Image (cartoon, rainbow, N blue to C red; front, side, top):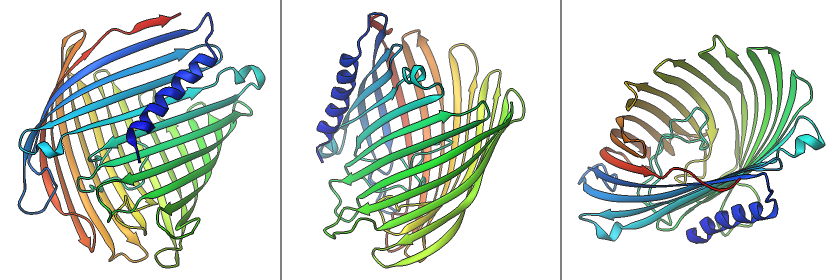
Length: 402
C-alpha cells in the first residue's frame, strides 16, 4: 500500500468538499503546530532477551483545518513525524496520519432530527501502540503489542441517526478497516466490515437505554477466493446514568456468536460486556473502565479472540500552567475456541507532567512501562521503558474566511 497516496487522498477530499459548498457567511480556520521530541526506548525491537535500546529525535509538524457553515461542518487534520535514531539510522522514518470528520447540519432543514456523520482516519507508523486508554477504543484487541513493522491502517465510517421523539432515537452505522504490514509477511492483514443498528430510549433526564445489534465480517487478504473468514454477531443492551452533574456510569451486556470459516471451521458463543465510570471535579477528571469483547487477532492470528481490558486514566491541574496525568491499562487476549493457539497478557503504566511555558509553547515530560507475556506459537514476550521530552509550538488559528 502506498501510504503517501492515502494521506494525500484525505487532504484532497477535504478541500474538494469545501470547494463545493463555500458560502459567504462560512468560517474557515487553519491551526498549524510543530513539536520536537527526544525519546529513549530501552527495548526498541521489543524482544525478551538481548534488548537493544536507542534514543531518537522526533520532529512532528501538524495542521488542523476547520470549516463551519449552515450546510456542512468539516474538520480535517494532518500530522507528519520525522524519526531520527542515534544508533540505528536504518530505522529512520517519516510517519504520518490524516483524518477528517464531516457533518451535514443542512439535513435538519429537510428532516428535523436527521443527522449524518462521515469519518476517515489513516495512520502510517513503524509501530502502533498497544493501549489507547480510550473509553470506547476503535480496536477490539487492546493490549497486544506487535513487533516493529511498517503498518498502515485505514478506517472509514458513516453514521446515520434520527431522533423520532424526545425519548426515542435510532442510529445506523458502518465502518471499514483495512490493515497492511509491509515488512512482516507472517502477520495477517485483515479487512473488517462492521455494521450496527442501535435503538435508544431516554427514560429520564439522567438515564439513557440502548439496544443494539452488530455484525462484523473479517476477510484476511490471502489468495483464497472467500468473502468472509470470521463472522461475528453481537446483541447488547446498555444503560447510561448520570448520578450527579459530575459523576456518570454506563455499561452494556450481551452475547456474541462467532463463526470461523478459516483456517478451520467452528462456532462459539461468548458473553460480552463493558462498564465505565467517570468523575469530573474542579481540578481534573478520572475514568475507570472494564470490558470483555470479541474481535480479530491484531494481525497475529486469523482466529477469533476474546479480549479482556481494564484501564484507568486521571488528570489533575496543579495550577494555571502545570498539569499531571496518570494512565494504567491491562489486557488479556485469548484465541477461541482453541485457547492454546494465542494467549497474551499485558499491562502498561504511563505518567507525566505538562508545563505551559508561554501561551504558544508547551512542554511535556512522560514515562511509560510496558510488559507483555505471550504463550502459544505466536506473539512476543518482553518489557520496555520509554522516557520522552516534548516541546510543542502552536500558532494562533488563522482565519482564512468568515
